[in-house]
Every structure is written in structure tokens, then in C-alpha cells.
Length: 321
Image 1 (cartoon, rainbow, N blue to C red):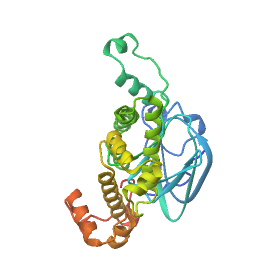
Image 2: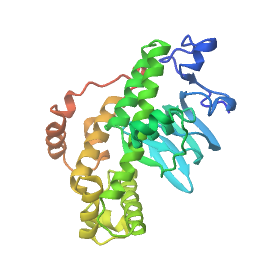
Image 3: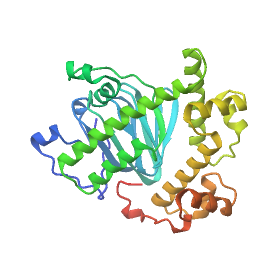
Image 4: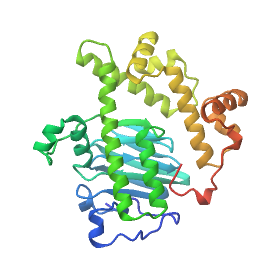
């Protein structure tokens, strides 16, 4: 599997990783099938059209630096943009499609088998157990997670992308990849914490509630421009509105309205930084009906007006949002 086939010129084709250095630093660009599992990889490239019909690999992060890329898993569509990322468990089979007039750049770390699992084991074990079994191996099953790139996992991803763009040393990239693995393990742990925060008595009920809450959040992420109300979000979860509100706040420690406002602002910031769209077009694209309300909400969150955000030229977008 050669994925992706094309690299743009913002990323050096030869990052200087030769011979035994590949044992420490992630392989960057495209990768042969034999490297999935034993090595850390960063699959990155810019295309207007590309398709992977079916593939399953180790734990991985699906992310883009600009544009949008569609991943499909078990019939579910995930349209990933610069403000979101998708954390996949080992063995999740997916297809991937880029089909747009403007290039979209992927930036997808794939973890060597055992890295995230060991970070998870360390976070869940006592010091005594770790001293007795320093090299134990565990399997780590979890449901795929669609999360905002503004959180700890996204920030660690951005740090790695910045280091790649700056052609940092192999040792530095290796350290940053290990840190990213630790953040991925914590993202899995957060999914379990979300489940434990729900007050339903039965585990099966908590699992079902969290599944429905995530379905609603994914529906909103797919179309932030829609006029989302509490009733509309609850309908996506097949829950009564106030039951949905209560459970949403329990699990995610954020009210639906506050989460929606935050995600609209984060999407707007990503569009301002990675596209040449006008502020008015971006205002409408993230669900605001008026420029006044959009500008006020954006400025309250980021401390700057949308019109003053530094725009990145189309030919100089590099790897970062």
C-alpha cells in the first residue's frame, strides 16, 4: 500500500532518515505494508483525488492540515477537517476518499503496535506492578473517537506536525511521537471516564446512552451550518430533549449549547487559517445568521475579531492549521 502517492513541496521528500534511524524516528510520507505494525508512521500528502478502498491497520489518527477528507467505517461517514481528528483502534477497517477541486492534505500518524497500549498500561497500573512486569503487553479495545483538535491530543498532533515541517532531528520526532501516543492513550481513558460519569445504574444502559450522545455529536460535526436546537440534537440521539441535555452534561462536562458554540468557533478559526473564504462565507458555513453575532462570539472566545486572524496563503499552508 503506497499512501498517499503525492507529496507537495511544503514537506521535504527526503527528511534525512536513513538506515537504523528508522528504528527510532517515524517514517514520513508513504509506507509499504510491511511497515504497518513494527514502525511509527506519518502518512502525509496533498491530493485532489485519492481513494483507498479498504484497509485496516494499527491504532492511528486520521487528520488533515487543510481541505477535507472522507473516511468510512462500517457504513458511517466521517468528514475530517482541520479542526477535528479521528482516533481509530487497531483493526478498524476503513475506506478513504479525497475528491475536491482544491488539494487536501492528510497528516495521519500510525502507531507501532504496543506504543499506545503500553502508555495505557502504565496509566492504569501501580508502580509495584510495573516494576514486576516492566515490559508487559496488553490489548486495548475502544470505540473510534471523533474529537476536536483543540484538546490535548490535537495539540500534541500539532506539535508533531510543526516539528516535521521544521525538519527537526529524528530524536526530537521520536520523543514527540511517544508523547502523542501517551495523549492517544489518555483520549481512550477519557472515553471510559465519559461512560463512568453517567448516573445510570446498569453498565449496558450507560453504554447505550453514550452511543446515542456520540451519534448526536457526530451529526452536528457533519453539518455545523444547520440550525441546531436542543430538540434537533436530541432527535439525532433518539432521546427526550431534557434527558439528552442532562446526560450530555454528565458525560462531557459541557452543556450542549456551550459545546455547539465552541465547535462553531473552532471550525471558523480553522477555516480562517486554512482557506481563502471570506469572513461572511465562513460565518454562514458554521451556522451563524448574522455577522454581528458571529464576530461577537468569536471575539469572546479567542480575543480577536475574525477579520484580524492571520490568513495563510493557499501556496504556503504547510502542515499546520
